[in-house]
Image: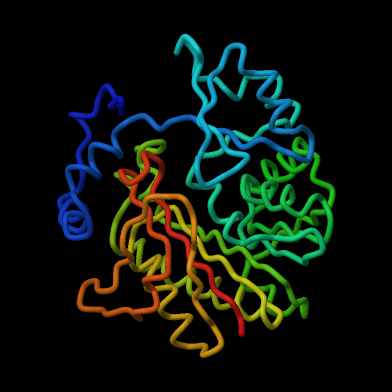
Length: 316
C-alpha cells in the first residue's frame, strides 16, 4: 500500500503540467503515486559477494522481496518497519550492495554488456548503472565511465572504488566530444540528463523546476548525445537510450529523430517481466515513427517505481 507524503495536499502542480500529464496518462493515478513514498531497493554487487551470502547477512533484520526484472535486485524493508536508513548498513559501506531504484536497474540489463566488450557510459555519475555494467562484465573488458563536470566525478569515483570496479576508466568531458576519439564501442549507454519527471516521489523540487522551455532545451542536448553514442558504435553494436523523464520530447521524439536520420539504426524489442505502458506515438501535433512501439515506457503507477523510458537500438 502506497503511503503519501505528509504534506501532499499542500503540493501545488503548475496548471500547464496538469494539462500535459492529463493528456498523457491517468492524472489522478499518476499524482497519487508520484506523491507517495518510494520503496527502497538494493542491487547485490556480485563482484564482491554472492546473492545467497548477502541475504544470509541481512535477512535477520531486513526482509527482501525479489524485483521480477533483475536477478540481483530486491526491495528491502526493515522487519519491524522501524528503519529506512539502508545506506547506513555496513554491507553498503563494504560495497556488497548498491542502493538503487528498481526501475533504474533496467537500462544495464537491456544493454547486456559482456565480459570482453568495450563499453561507454556517456553520463555515468553517480555510478549506479556503471557499477551494474561492470558487474555484468565481471570486471573484464574496458568500461569508459564519463561525465561532464568535476563535481560529478566525486561520487562516481567513490562508488566505483567502493564496489570494487577495476575495469573502468573515468573521463571528464562533454559526451559529444567522444566523436573525436576514434574509439569504436560494442555497447553504449546514454542515460541522458533529463527533466526527471519520473522521479517526483524522491525529488519534489522537480515539480517546481519543470517548464516546457527546459524540456525543449534538454531534448536538443539528448538528440546530440544519442547521435554521438550511435556513431561511436561498431557494426552490430548496441545503444541503450534511457531517461527518468516522462516527457515525449525527451523520449519518443529523441528516438524518432535517430531512427529517421539513420537507416541502419534498428529498434529492438525489450523483453522483461514488467508491466509497461504504450509508447507515445503522437504528441502536440507531432507524429512519431510506428517502430517506437518497441520502446519501454514505464509510468510510476505501473509497477510502484520511478517512471522510466528505455530504447534499445542496434547498428546494422
